[in-house]
Image 1 (cartoon, one colour):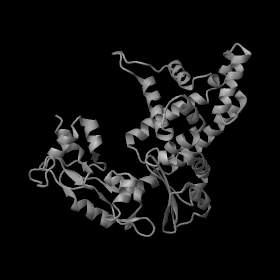
Image 2 (cartoon, one colour):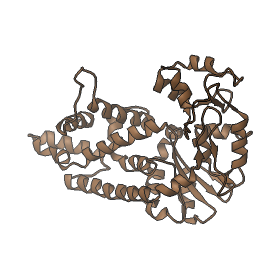
Image 3 (cartoon, helix red, strand yellow):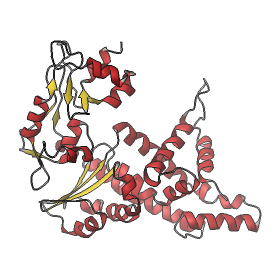
Image 4 (cartoon, one colour):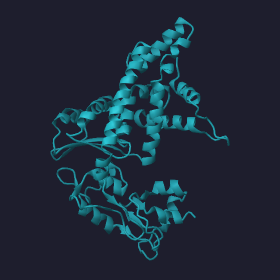
Length: 360
């Protein structure tokens, strides 16, 4: 029986990637395998041989999601659904069985005539009725670092899957028994595909579909950025949402500025109340931020930052323990060491340069 994880490792080494650094620490090969393990853990709650095989079969909807949301959340409307409909149908069908596992990472929601719909079967049914008042939101709820690392590793895994040398590796098997075992394994992994030609065609077709998503993502980069009109803040004033073009924003902009997941945003609905279309009043969000912002005592930090750090990010980037971050906070701005916004009782975000000065 073939071991897809071992074969991926060998393929990476043949591509020139190293297993270890000069100092003996794990290197690129280990990193790619580690990231694929993490994706399998998210979707299938495990990362052993069977989960890697499932990922090989589900590579289109999963890699497709990371491709569509490469930099920003993807808002799918009547104007752009032609390039994304095939992916949406595939994702909603293939990932339906794993929805409970992936809800904290892959968000697909339909804002339809004032209702928020997150049931996959209903989204699939209603997507044919998109108009100017309705849209579908795709958002990766993990960190930007996770989004990038997962996408890069999945892209490399897909290159491996569609490599003819890997697909045709059955030629190296010497006995009829080995060949039969190999084909039985391939049949289980690749949706009952029986020949190398079928498997190659399967992945070539996916490659074309991924190219369509890449083209869509590139074409809509500018429109995605317009949806997230965040103006940066510094040690003396917080970031805000620009209200010069309209009065309301979609949920992803609120999540981006407050650095929270959609589930957290829903828990704040008694404070931050969406309208019947699921949008948020910009002035309400800016007031919430201003009311919960505490400047730091430092006035020499004019640099504006759109993205403020969560506690986890501050710790990962500087090594400062979260308990120390807690001690650095002070509601008195004349004594406060790190400018921050109190998003909720448990959630705070911090102005990066103030945090950085504390790790010097």
